Image 1 (tube, rainbow, N blue to C red):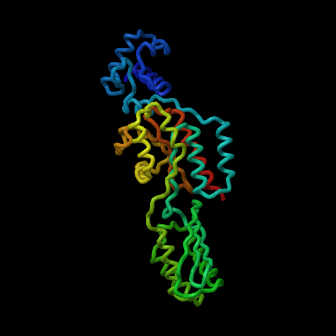
Image 2: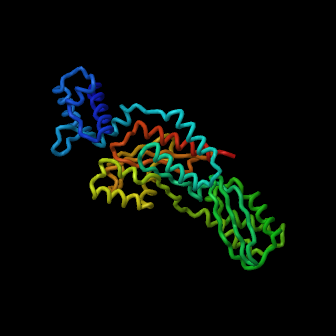
Length: 343
C-alpha cells in the first residue's frame, strides 16, 4: 500500500471513529493536507474499496472502514495514546490501597475500566484449579461437621462444610490443618490429586490418632478443587455499548442485550484469547461467534508470580477508539497484577 493510501485510510478510520458518519473525499480534502485534489482522493478511496479496506454504505457517497481496514489501521497506522499521569495515579491509589477480596476488587475494576473507555468492560476472575494453595483452616462447627476454609494465592477464598463420620477434637483439627499447610503450601490446586493426599494421610495417621475415615472425607473435599471449573465473568457499564450509534436499531439492541446475558458465551469468547503478554484485539468478523460480528474485543491478561491468572478487556463496536482503549486495558491489567502481587 502506498504512503498516500495509508494516510487516507488512517484519516477515514479516525474520522469515522469520531463521527460515526461515512467519510467523503471533500471532507478529507477540507480537513487534511494531502496535497492532492478531491478527485485524486476519490480515486484512492475507490482503490481502497476494491482492496476491501473500505466499503460504501447503502445510499451514501462516503466510505467506512471494513474489518480488514480496521485491522490494518490497528496493526500499522494507529498512534497509541498513553493513559494520563493523573488517571494512573488515581486508579493505582484506588486499587492498590483497597482492602477487599479479589472478587469485589474485580467487580470494581470492571466498572473503572468501563468508565475510562465508555465501553462495556469484562473481567474474567482467576480459575480456582489453577490457583496456588496458600492456607487451609479446619474449624469444628458441630459434633460431626467441619468448616473448611481454603485461601489461594490469587485471593480466592472457598468455604465448605464437610460432614465427617466421627467426632474430632479441636486440637486434632489444628494438627491436621498445620500438617496439610506444610505439605500443600505452594502447590497448584490442579496438582493436588488423590494420590498426593493419600500419601499425606499415611504420614498423618502415624503422627496423630485420628480416624482415617475423617481424613478421607476432608481430603475428598480438597481434591475436588482441582476439577476444572469456569472462573466468574464480571461486566461493568453494560449500558455504555447501547449508547453507541451502531446499536440504535431495536433489533441490534436486543441482540447485544442477549449477548451480554449469556455469561457462558462471553466466557468462551474470552477463552479464545491466548494468555500471552500484551494486548490482543479481535475485530468484528475475526471472531468465531456470529452473535458479535458487529463488535470488537480488546483483551489483556493479568498475572501473578509471572503466570497468567485472568483476563480483562472491553467490548464495543468495531468503530472503537482503539488508540485509547488498548493502552487503558493494558494499564488496568498491569494494575490488577500489581494488586495481586501485594504481600
